[in-house]
Image 1 (cartoon, helix red, strand yellow):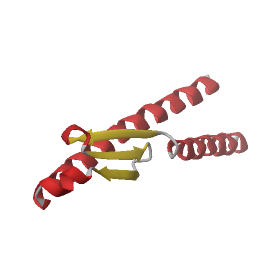
Image 2 (cartoon, rainbow, N blue to C red):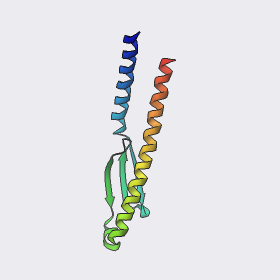
Image 3 (cartoon, one colour):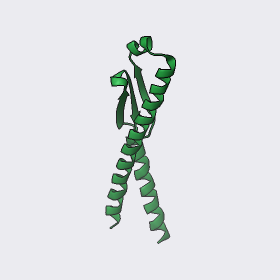
Length: 100
């Protein structure tokens, strides 16, 4: 009985680890200021890319750019978190089906 429980726990852990690795390859993109600043994050909530249009660097004050970056990073990380939650719920539901 204990061996079965330990095997089950090991399988669940392996499944979750595999899913976390897959989340590295699932990305979300977000932008602010009409696309003048763009960011990409993976579903593990890691920022993987930020692009700032040169026009903005020329015309905007540094404080405006900083505020836009903060807004953008919060936005893309929120979207990545929601995607991660959805993907992990799918995985959990799939695992529950296997046990029923």
